[in-house]
Image (cartoon, helix red, strand yellow):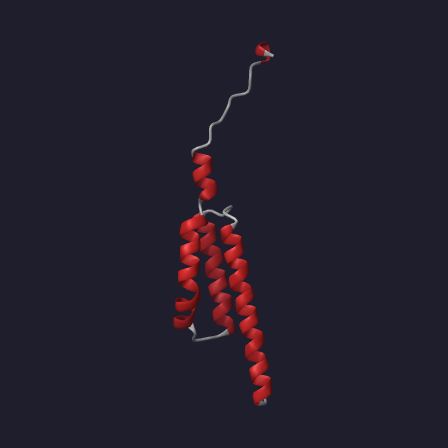
Length: 97
């Protein structure tokens, strides 16, 4: 592989990493995942990112782990919290209609 090809390949992989990170962040910020689901999503994203750049564990930790952790802390589990504080109204009896 020539130097130019190697550079293009690295740029392609870097774009793919950015896409993975952005999609993962977007899904987490929708707030519809449980904490466990969000953590599982991040685990898959981490695996894919490290497949693209093997041996970049420290770089992943610096660039993405903190971001994902903050997003999970802020957004994941919102649906669970909302459900636990929701007021459930009973159906009226037929005799009340």
